[in-house]
Length: 466
Image (cartoon, one colour):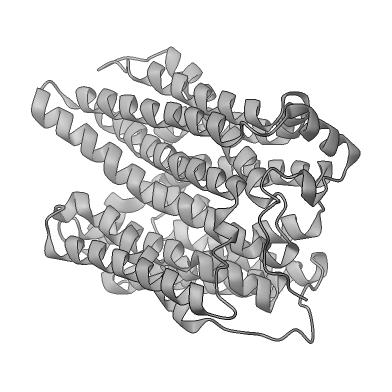
């Protein structure tokens, strides 16, 4: 539901603009408001799950998300819809890291956790891509309001079932230390960065609001590092970010966010504006990408067992790059038969990367820090998604204006940039996992337990908690 809400809204933007009277480019705030609060609060949401309880934060986030969805579906005011979307982002920022850390904290390192993370990645893949299909159906046959109202029964049902299906994980008697300054600085920095990236292409990179947001990001990050180093119980133990596995996973996740979000927007616009497909048909054309991703997540553990983490990440990012090379030859009319091959390759590569980076980031991390790690990984993905949409759309528009031979030139240029980003991911995956031996990984997965000392980055001491 949370992942699907990124793509489902894009289909309805023209209808929302007309119904609520959004002026100019202001309708983009329906997307931007969600991205800012979601990306900005993920680290805080992840740490809250570690301290206050993952199930509690999961349920609370679901309730907020469902309430905001109901408000968005019923409102008749443009400003209130933007506010509802921002509140949806708040709920999502607590649901996403709590859901992932519920998995990583419940299963010890080994085949069960790896298999569970594969299913998690599959769900994300199918949700992100099929959002356009579901959105197309709802907008075409009902009303734009239904894309928000559909979240209400899902969110309420999940919130009611969670206490019955998920164990209570709060550690009673544990002292709670709140790093208020760190929370404010991290949220402000990430939110300002997402705003700058999202609005830079719309307002112009030299606009005072964009420049101010960049300055606020830099100042906030400097202040955050200073506060965290001095705080006795920091929001983020900076030593955790020094782990090679988490660093590699973070960089790959950032690149993943760039190519995934950017590709879906550019490809969707190509299908609807150049080939004149309806939103529903465009969604169906892209749908195989999600289906292949779903299958990849299910069988990802077998690929990792057989070939190792390094091979999985390198082959996944390389397959994505090849898929984008195929998309560089999009035609101006008619059906492009290799398009199916391209979306299959991108689907396999994207979810293979999601699966591998999730396992890599969580490896060797104590249960008390799993929520924080989940928040960090999700934050890099959201920053990457904002950057990807801004970058690839700007490349497409710039090439169109410069070459002047139709929008297809811009789409091809955007796909070439996406290919370069994916192949850069292949280099990062190769360098970042070069110390990991496939045989050791296979042995640890088969045995069911991977000792902390076996992790490639376990030599870095971390703060111990009760």
